[in-house]
Image (cartoon, rainbow, N blue to C red; front, side, top):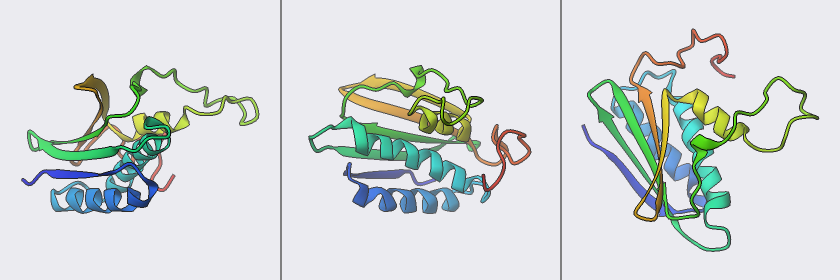
Length: 152
């Protein structure tokens, strides 16, 4: 199966190109149609965070790769050369407190973690590498999950 591989400047102007390419690749490789919007949302959230925060006032690129592992799981890697940032070490936000009492930030990463089956971070060769694993058809975030609903 063909891999997905895109490198574009870390600019909001390129967000749509990343997501459209990802969506087409997921469809072509047989991901369950109901899962695609959730994967798009997780990847979009990660890309927006990189675009907004990784490079500060400098320019840089984002590399998006996709592959199918063992014919059961999709592996999506997002790489940048920006400031080191391990999303996996952020504390879980308090989703039970009121909006008024909640700290700003952290919900995007929480969302990413809920949309994928497994999320890993590593820093290698001066790059942040965020790896998402998503089951092809039946996964942790299927529509039968009580805390995540289709269209939510």
